[in-house]
Length: 186
Image (cartoon, rainbow, N blue to C red; front, top):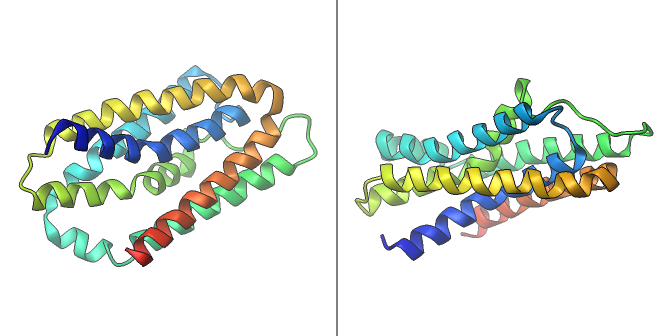
């Protein structure tokens, strides 16, 4: 697989993480830098490890998961999106939702935004491409893009945190719908 193709795949995989980090940064949901780093770290690990797991596990896993992965991603993203919208509509001075880098939230966010990485692992396996270097590249790009999302929207969030939390929730729902439509039509 050539570098340009791999780069396009990696960037497109990271855009879901970027969108979530934009919403989290704007809503100022992470209480401190350590929590922000933890969230970016989870996204990076999930994005890099999922293709390796499928590649190592072979076609058996993807045949089982491939039938409903899009429904799972849609459900998880819709749940989180609705939660963010509700939180953004609260009449408090500062809308706040649970720290997304702790508890069930980080697991749901990490799995939901990175399910498409399973397909990349399968594709690399079918093309007989060793997965380890692409997985490292995926991790580095995801780390950079997710961190940029938190940083960029943290600046915006200081002015419009509740509105951006609502926008971020809508973005999560749209990502879920896009995932569902892509799989149903593709």
